[in-house]
Length: 238
Image (cartoon, rainbow, N blue to C red; front, side, top):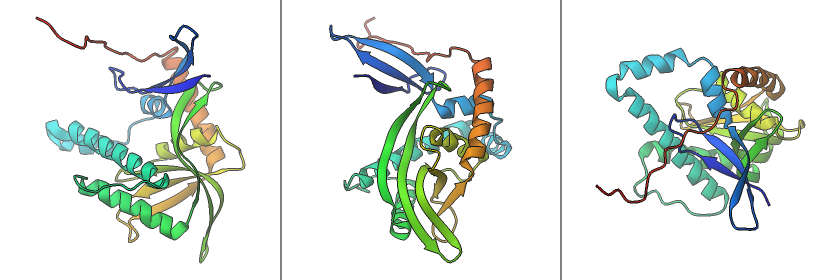
């Protein structure tokens, strides 16, 4: 039976996914290897001007701060996945920013009462040669005033300070791997709203069309891209 494995050890920082087929002799055979959705978009979508400006203003530590934020985002995703699976999450030693975002997710659940379908599922697309991890698939039946969210949603958590159109395009790629009857949304956690979160539905078909254009650009600029991995021995000897 084939399975998908994520590769985070690429020297250039790109993320890949490989499809593996176990062989009878105990070894493994790679069926295919595709870049992640975020890797493709990061390479071809123009960088946010405000983000670049902010990193430069931070001096030598700007990039380090940006990367640390990415690590905190990963911690938030892991904590949320555990909560969805019914496991407790200890807050001891957890950064304040992480606590704030996890609490925001809990508050969103109490308000929207989603029916969880799948959490942190790897997706694979041979047509457009990409893979990725979908944060959440859930069903909503929420109405408050003139606001209404009903149906099955492909949801992506965002812990950055602001939302960008690239985030919508990323989720639209995941949406493209599902039923076209589904909807797509971003759950922005730990922001400066009164609730501490915001839930934004967007036009998934329109953003998926944009993804296809960016994907075509990536395939022209980086044909047959592969992860660049450096391998070292378990023990160094001088």
